[in-house]
Length: 124
Image (cartoon, rainbow, N blue to C red; front, top):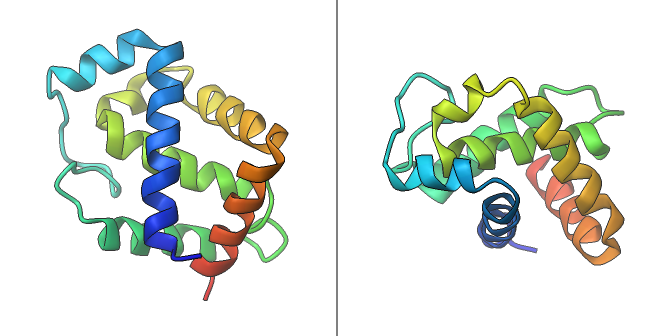
């Protein structure tokens, strides 16, 4: 699976799910409030740049963590930051939110298999 295509597809799924469950985040994104500063921020970041940043963060995990929920959480956090801007980092429930998204993804076998394949590809 092409990791860039997979990132785009999973990003769309995440955005839809988060927007449905957190209208407040969706409204803040529509206002365009995104500040720079996060290593993953920047709506103008290309998919290739995003892929490289996610791959770098995943490779920084221990080998045992890379294909687990921890690796998936690195991906989810990066996508959330890109989609909703840096202001999401100020939300005290950000970590819990990203864990809940990963848990939901893990419950869907097809989606989790795609995530696992993408995590493998990003480690190459």
